[in-house]
Amino acid sequence: MKGADSARRSGLEKPKREKKQKTPPKPASPVDLDVATEKEIEALRHIGPTLAKRIVADRDFFGPFGSMDGLKRVKGVGPSMVAKLDSAVTFSLVPRPTNRVISRPSELPKARRKPHLRDTLR
Image (tube, rainbow, N blue to C red; front, side):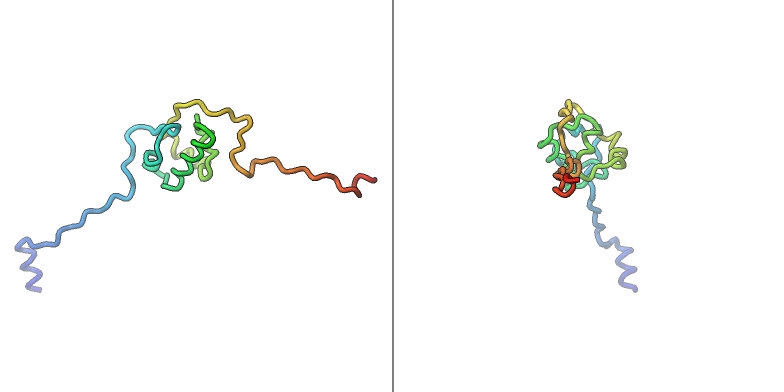
């Protein structure tokens, strides 16, 4: 124990390691999701690399979001995520008209079945 006490007194300590920052720094101003890059979107709180890729891919395929309702079409973004991101994001472009956009396969209309012959003979 004498060796350890004398090392402390003489100032020979192990250098302390600096902690790595796990998340990117928080953006100072709101991020425009209609034009932001994947890295800018990933810097937002609650958004990881996978969701950032999905947001960019959806925007590139279907066009700009235009509002929080447009952002909901991305898989993984629901009402709770929209509430968390509300003050951190903005939208600058006009959204694509939504009258014919089908954003998810679950929203496709179900195929109609033809009636069976036995059902039409009655």
